[in-house]
Amino acid sequence: MNDRPSQNGDFETGCISHTGKVRTANEDNFLLRPEYGLWAVADGMGGHENGALASATVVAALEGVGAADSAAALLAMLEQGVLSANETLRDEIRRRGATMGATLVVLLVHERHFACLWSGDSRIYLVRGGRITQVSRDHTEVQEMVDRGVLTPDEAKHSPRRHVITHAIGVHEKPELDLENGEIADGDTFLLCSDGLTEHVTDAEILQAVETGGAQEACDTLLALTLQRGARDNVTIVAVRYRQGASERTRWMPNRSMRGGTTS
Image (cartoon, rainbow, N blue to C red):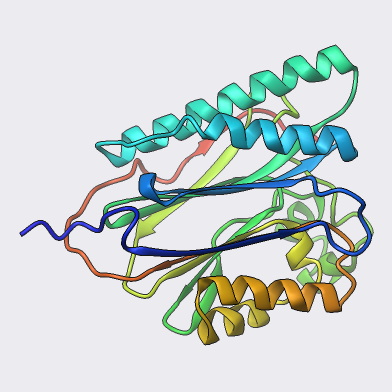
């Protein structure tokens, strides 16, 4: 008996994207490819037109990711897509003489293992056993200051520089992605989001929404809460719930980073 989870049958996916109540255009984009074990959210930066173009460029490049016979092959396709998007954006920046880029958060799943990759301050959470964990770590100026002990986490939440990004796709000649991975468990739910959600909603509220509803219901509940609180930015949410068990094992490469430069 082959008890590997099929990529389109073992995951319940919910998603929603909204302009918010202040912005006039939505610069977020997302990609859902459960049949290939890929989910992604990209948040554009650089102004209305440039930001939307940047996030769309990143998502379009990731559409080339397809079926993989191993975790390493899936990861390699993802990284090639990111490199391609970064090169395209660098060319566009030179052509336009404008600053632009996109944050990115990605969930990859192959058999019983997952990998989370990110660049910027879009986030990915894991809800497991009634607890929520922020898997990604914000690539922001204030997060670096927290890491150095210059700011407390509470001070960082209210800092006027909390949105200053240190990494994003298109910002440097070589992109930078951080990666965390692990083994998926029955009932796990991953939530990917742009910072338009976490600006207004706490981790505890994300946990409650995920625990009390299905994947789409969780997305709808969190968007409604964000809109009630002013939704100062675009907000995009993707929820992915693993619904079945399996025993097949595979391995990702060890935790590592795809490293380029940094900016502030």
